[in-house]
Image: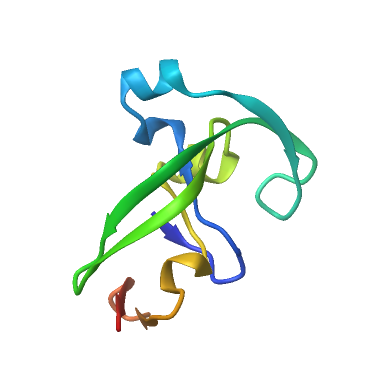
Length: 105
């Protein structure tokens, strides 16, 4: 995962899905902006919810987008981008020295 505090929503890569989820997913296309692929058209789908386990607590994120061709994650081999929605009504702790982040109530 990588943390994007400027992103309103979190996204997953297709690698996160099981084979069954890939087959059942309703795929669409969407054009994205921003530095992570200005004007790129990608296959996208929606998952109802996922559970993300942080060191201090787990967070359920609903209606998360799956981006099948997200270039940022292709190059960095991450599982997705965490936006500010993961810390909604919570406190986010970022440790720059150890390159870790956590959420607490």
